[in-house]
Each structure stands twice: as structure tokens, then as C-alpha cells.
Image 1 (cartoon, each protein chain N blue to C red):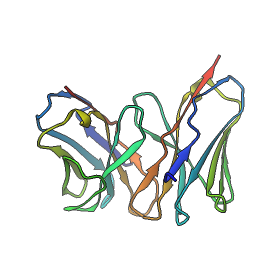
Image 2 (cartoon, chains in turn brown, cyan):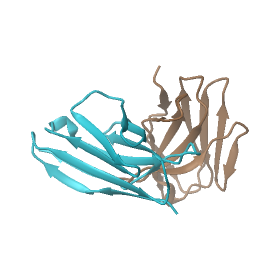
Image 3 (tube, rainbow over the protein chains, first blue to last red):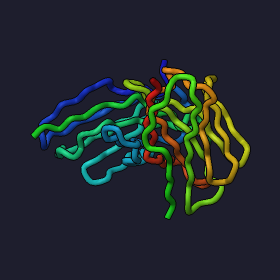
Length: 110
Length: 112
């Protein structure tokens, strides 16, 4: 099983749609979880951290299920500007390194 | 506020030539520093990380090396580049008290 595995995508959705990304991780000792966003040919940027109780930031909702070792990201009311690759990121039990999923490409169409 | 700078942004190098990518962080002390590589169609691969001056951990055996001569400076090098070294190289830092990492703008390397 890969350390961090994401939906392969790509996702093509119309503006205003709701889209959900899923991610699973293999290391049960993992403590920190994040979603990053990467625009084409740019560096990844932190979108949001994922907390045990779930958390929301505007149109974005992240959830964590430790028992199933599963993370999700929900985007409501998609905007054209949401088009990007979304990376699931997990601390692999070490304080020093984060492991990235391969990412899921989202394209929001007008 | 903290900033991270990485250079050069783009370079084209012949096979067998040396490489030096440099990264500096400002506005913080004793950060954890990282070098990642993102090859075409692949995810981010951790190459090296450093928890202090002169302390380098290698994640993937290859013809690359890293050095940390100063607290906020991290250098990625190669003596002889291979075609397979082409990719997007990203320097990143993590504050001592946090879990989130922040990336530099990246360096696009094409080995020809």
C-alpha cells in the first residue's frame, strides 16, 4: 500500500458544483494532515490543515477518519479559480518529513 | 514575516555538467529545510532534509548531494547530471515549532 494515495482524477466540473477528493494513508502513527494546492508550474501552497474534528474554511471542508486512515476535501460552489492540483499531505510519523500524494487535478469549467 | 528564496528559477544543463541550486530562508531561525523533486507526471519526492547546520539526511540514493553551510541556507548539488535528473526542484522550510512546510518558487531543471 502506498504511503499516501489519492483519487487519480482528473475531475472536470461545472462552476457551482460540489466536488470531493479522497485520500488514504498507510502509517497509522501519522499525526498531521494537510491539503495543499498546486497551480500549473508553480510551487504547492498550503490550502488547509486537517483536524480530527473536521474543519471548514469558507467553501472548503476537510475531514479526517483516523480509524479508516482516510482524509477528504470537499469544495462547494466551485469557482474557475479553484482549478488546480490538490495534494494530500501526511506526516509519516516523523516530525521532520511530510509525504505527498500524487495529487488530483481539478478543472472547473464555465 | 518569513520568506524563502530559491534560484535559479530555470536552467538547461547538458548531461555530465555540474549543478548547484541555492535556497535561503529569511525571518526565522533554525528551520528544518527540505529539497523535493517533482518529475513529470509524478508526485513530490523528498530528496534531502536538514534539522541544523551540517546535518543532512538523504532519502533517496542518487547522484545528488545537499549541504547546509549556514542556518538558513540550503544547497543542492550534483557533480555530473543525468537525463533523469530533469524535473521541478523545490526547496521548503518548516518552523521549529510547527508542522506545516512552505515552499520556495521552485527551479525547473532540464538536462539535455
